[in-house]
Every structure is written in C-alpha cells, then in structure tokens.
Image (cartoon, rainbow, N blue to C red):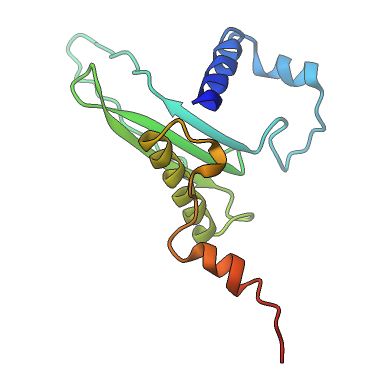
Length: 155
C-alpha cells in the first residue's frame, strides 16, 4: 500500500510536466544515444484508461479501427487497457506484451507476464503486504531454480 502510494505521488508529479516535449527532455538529460536502444528506458508499463473522442462527419459512417504495427520502440512493453463496459465504467483490464525478439524468446516473455499477473493478483487480494511477500513463482518453479538448478552435488 505504501509503495502504491509513493508510485501514485511520483506519477502525479510527473504528469504535471507532461507538456514538456520529449526531445527537450532527452536533450536536457543528455543520455548516451544509440540507434540500438531507446535513450531513456528500455522497458515500459503503460495503462491506457482514457477514451478517444468520437469523430462525427455529416453523411459519413465513422468507426475506429485498431492498427497493429507489431513493432515497439522499447525492448519490452507491457500495455494495459481498461475495458469500457457501458461507456462509463471499467469492466476489467486487458493487456498485451510487445518485445524485441532479438533479446527475448516467447517462453521468457510469457514467464515474465505470468509473474506480473501473479503480482497484480496478490496486490489486489492483499495490498498491505510488503512487496517482497508476494509470490511470483509459477507452481514448481521455485523448486526448480533453488533445488534442481542449484544442486551441485556430484559422486
């Protein structure tokens, strides 16, 4: 609960500066630049919880069509959308993960996504726990990593 509060406050402070052009921020921070990676961060978690306005044109039927680019400027991107049930209330959250296939394989990304889901489920169930107390391992995974992979006994 404390961590969520700190994250919320940090985000609200950041939102107060959302009108600053990104290139100006990059110029001011002057990170090392490379065409191989994003200048400030490689992993992003985004929640889209605002609705685009509707476009009305006289005599024309208009509807939004999602466009999949299958590209991301980031090495790993978790993107969430709240599902709009009736135009006013959220009906859940759906998400996608995009990743750089040169850096990650599908199994690794699925395991990361599973851990994130277990974390979110744990926080929703008991938000007062310290972050270190939420179980992120899939069934059998802890035993595999701690016991099987770490078993160095030899005859």
